[in-house]
Image (cartoon, rainbow, N blue to C red):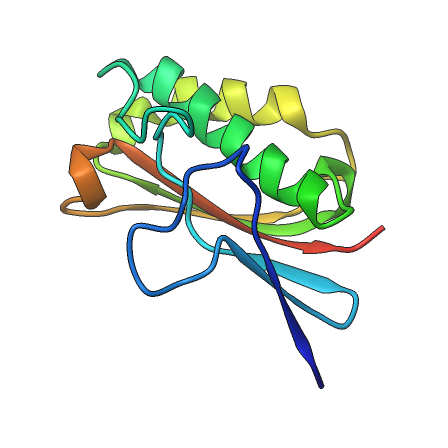
Length: 127
């Protein structure tokens, strides 16, 4: 099956040997997004709410570039450096999604690239 690389200037450029997302058939697999401002390439504020909102904006840009949306997300994986931030992250996350919600995993990790507090990746259908 052919794969199509998804790239948008509205999300941060890849900082390594990976694509922002890959489409295979009608499925989209995003790379993890960290809270980088796509115009500056810099990490946004140290605040978990601001970081989560930036990650969600970045993912939305990738979803839109592929012709998909939050409504088509079937699986999300959230990586946090501190699970104590979960309630704030969950509130921001829920503001983007409507029931029926996608499957989701959330794990605490020792560290994330560039000192980010959060990274999220999703799998979505193409609308």
